Image 1 (cartoon, rainbow, N blue to C red):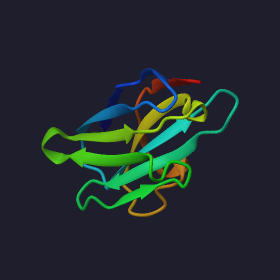
Image 2 (cartoon, rainbow, N blue to C red):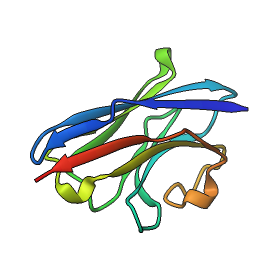
Image 3 (cartoon, one colour):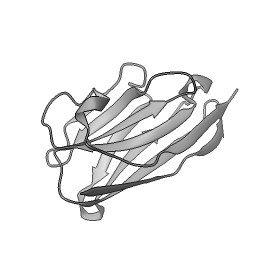
Image 4 (cartoon, rainbow, N blue to C red):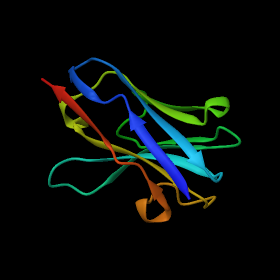
Length: 122
């Protein structure tokens, strides 16, 4: 089993920044990803990182604004979000997968955190 606990969400004005954290415990995984889901919309891939090699993947919609990173010593993955826009408003989820490919698909993740709300005001 893997437990994932997100933190760091909140309310921020457009153009501001937030950093989300995801503390992981339990068995090791191949990759950890961030997804988001806005009201009435499907869950959307945001970013992912390899747990062992720091290989990263970012969705086109957040490239240049969001950065995923990890601290292996703390078993924690971060999502630094800069230049936030109102359309970034969503519940953000951390997820873990044992797969080595297909990290952009939510169906490929076996474990999920409870989510943290990010609200960007205009």
